[in-house]
Every structure is written in structure tokens, then in C-alpha cells.
Length: 438
Ligand SMILES: Cc1cc2nc3c(=O)[nH]c(=O)nc-3n(C[C@H](O)[C@H](O)[C@H](O)COP(=O)(O)OP(=O)(O)OC[C@H]3O[C@@H](n4cnc5c(N)ncnc54)[C@H](O)[C@@H]3O)c2cc1C
Image (cartoon, rainbow, N blue to C red; front, top):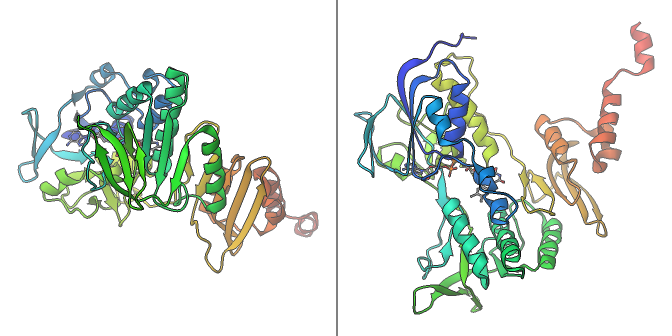
């Protein structure tokens, strides 16, 4: 391994002080060979915060302070120049210079784009009305909190992770501040909630639980238009089948669009997002991209786990550890969890079984426990767990490792403890074998 050199005289500029950009800073600070001068430019007016926790914050389950990753003073203490509330408007890749909306002009030796993504807004009439929100940043969460405080009817478009967290957040916030229920409907285009992660049984259990809490779930719902009142505020949602749902507030949680336009205008290769190689380098060797604004071998990102692994690769790369032995970024499956308190689900792998999959299921309706495993050649390829999800991480580990689980088949549905013991027994030599070896 090449020893870490001392800091290089390079000037590194990071665009975006979100989850990826911030974590990259933390990783660089652990590496002595990092660039000596680092500047971060972020459009939001506050330093990076834990975006994931916007959901529990909206639900009134935590304080604003708990979201803060580092105070502003930390950046200057570390010698990092932090420019907030300004947006990079243009990159001149030839001159290695960028300009901001606020009129700043900076040169760089290396540049990192960590510009994330934004809510994908459907192209329907009325999408620009007052009272129509995304759920992406602190401002959105504040606007939703105000809406919940006013009460009335909310419609959330999207029955995936984000939509359900927004819907539960609104309901709980309204209850906490008004002491009564807000009428919240969730519109899901597919025939079940979280259709990319859950099978029909788990989705039904989830729907029943959310309905029992007071959410109204409408599946097979196709958004047609939003209706405004005389003041330009949203007042109803229209579906393609002709239904009209009255609404004082609409949340759009129907996917994300990578913020790739800045990179595209700079001449970088862009498909759905900014194209990078396994070292997070774009088509310009001096410019890198990571997080939700990047695309690696056709994949774009929406969860932090792969982004954390990108950060480690890029931090090594930027710290002059460019020896051939350095591992590049490799795509890996990710597991899904939902952050709605009182609801436990854990899922990974394919949802629809293929012909050569063995399907093992366990369902205890009274306990609300459901498990479905997909195996191929005794190897776990997918799992959907609802209720008791304690074994989820163990299943995921087994799947990533590609372990042959034939030795623990009879205990496989009942968690890690017994199954592990059987696997250990199978892998340790039997007394007869030990004697023979002696
Ligand atoms: C409510 C919510 C809940 C979530 N829950 C989970 C979860 O439970 N698990 C999970 O894995 N993931 C979750 N996610 C997704 C996770 O937050 C993202 O994957 C992660 O934030 C991506 O990091 P990023 O740095 O790429 O983008 P971001 O965190 O969005 O950061 C990008 C930053 O760049 C800034 N920026 C953009 N353009 C410019 C420009 N031109 N100039 C300057 N600054 C710019 C933006 O303002 C933003 O601050 C959740 C997301 C949301 C919104």
C-alpha cells in the first residue's frame, strides 16, 4: 500500500453541502493526503443536516437540533471554507473556474459535484399552485408542518417510502398540534403500497395498519390535474377515473430527478444523471460526482448506503491514494426499511419470484408477522419481512455472502439464532472426522 502523503497544495471545491458532500468532508479530514484547501458551496442557507431525519422531525418525534451534523464553526475550525445560500450557476471546465448566482468566481484544481436531486414533479395542470409541496429539504418540512398546524385535508401523491413517511408525518404533526386527526389521503399509482419493495401480502398488512391509524389509501390512482381556487391555492386533486378529492395541501412524493443540469452545461457526459466511473470520475478527469446526482453503469441512487461507499472511494482518490490497488466503487444490493414508528418492515432482492425460485413463507396474522424468502439453489436472493424484522440484517448478510443455507433450512424462517447454530454445526468437523484426523 502507498503511504499517505502530506496534504497536496490542490484546491478542491465541492458543490453541494448535503448528505454526500458533507460525508465526503468528514472522510477527507481523516486522510492526511487530502487537498490542503477545500471550499464547499451549498445552496441551502444552513450547514448540512441529516435529511433522513426530516421524516421523524415532521412527525414531531425529534427536535431541529438533532438533525444538525456539524455547526458552522466546525467548518472554519477544520480550515474549510463554507459558502452557504449561494448556488453554482456555471462551470467553465476548460478554465477550471466556476461562478455562482451570488456573483462569486472561484478557480479549482479538482471539483466534486454533490448536487443531489429534487422531487420529480408530474407535468399536470395546477402543479405550480400554492399549497403544492415536495418533501426534500428543511423548507419543505417547515411548509408541511405549517399545513398540518392549519389542519384540513392533505393528499400525498406517491405510496412509496417518502410518500408514506410524509403522510404519517402530517397526520402525527396535526394530532400533536391540534389534538385531532388531519384527513390525509395517499394516492398510489400501482395496485399496492411500496410495490417496488413489498409483495401483495406485506403491502396489505401495511395498508391495513396505516388505514387503522386514519390514513386513507387509494391504490390504482392516476393523477390527472390539480384544481386551484380563486386565490391560486390548491383546493382539489382530480384523478384520471374522474374522482375529485378535496385538498388544502398536496405533497408530491412520486420519485426524484437528479440535479445533473449543471454538469451537463459544463459538457460532462450525462444520461439520467452525471455519468461516473468506478472512481467517481466524470468524463472530465478533474471533475467527480457522487450521490444522487451521479449515475454508475446505468444505476442512479436514492438511498444513502451506496452513497457512503462512494464517499470512501472518492475520499481515497482525492487523497492522492491513487495506487492501482485501491478498490473502485462496486454496485451492491441494498435493503429497505420504513421510518414510520410502530411499523417494522425490511426487504431486499427481487419482489416477483422467478420459475426457479423456491418461496418460503410464514404468516401469523394475529401477531401481524409475515416473512417471505426467495431462494435459488439454497441461496437467499430476496426477503420481505413485516412485523418482526429482527432477522432482516442477518438474512441480508447471508444473501450478500451467497451462503449455501441447506444446513439450516428447518430453522431459516425463525431468525438468526437457531439458523446460525445449525450452520456452525454443519461447518465444524464432526467428532468422527476429528478422530480420523487425529
Ligand atoms: C424526507 C426524506 C427521508 C429520507 N429517508 C431516507 C432513509 O430513511 N434512508 C435512506 O437511505 N435515504 C433516505 N433519504 C434519501 C437521502 O436523504 C438521500 O439519498 C441523500 O440525501 C442524498 O445525498 P446527496 O448529497 O446526493 O443529496 P442531498 O442530500 O440532497 O444534497 C445535495 C445538496 O446540494 C445542493 N445543491 C444542489 N445544486 C446546487 C448548486 N448548483 N450549487 C450549490 N448547491 C447545490 C442542494 O441544495 C443540497 O443541499 C431520504 C430523503 C428524504 C428527502
